[in-house]
Length: 178
Image (tube, rainbow, N blue to C red):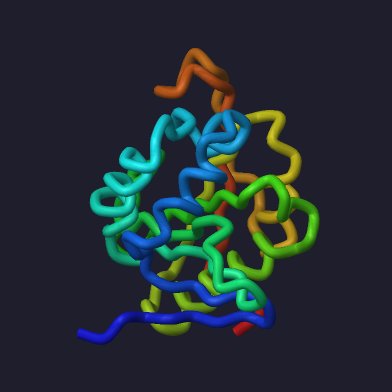
């Protein structure tokens, strides 16, 4: 089976490779990255390698590789029929994180829009979900730029994370970048 590679103007979205472990560790060891994404900061390059072998080996999980440098600078992916909410077979949850030096450059929005197009046009999904920790205004802005709308909010007492969460969704029929 051939590897799926998705491209944008500045990024290549491709499967994670073991040789990306050094870059992954460099960025994922920053506590703020994991905090916003819901995981602990990486403690070693070996831990990053193991994450690539296990978590990032799932279908539809992509390294965000900057074309200019060929370095992975983040991750974007779809959790098919799994995530924070019960989902139907034709739904998925989108998630992403980006290395701090690349924040506020539109890269996450660029990657997310490309993945959303893939989800609706190639995978024939009908709805995407997203979950953001309350207070993560940057992630919320990315989702709104992609057309996601508020579904509901959950107080910290109602969530597994122990943090207040905002749930958004996007219907295939309303996605504009087809």
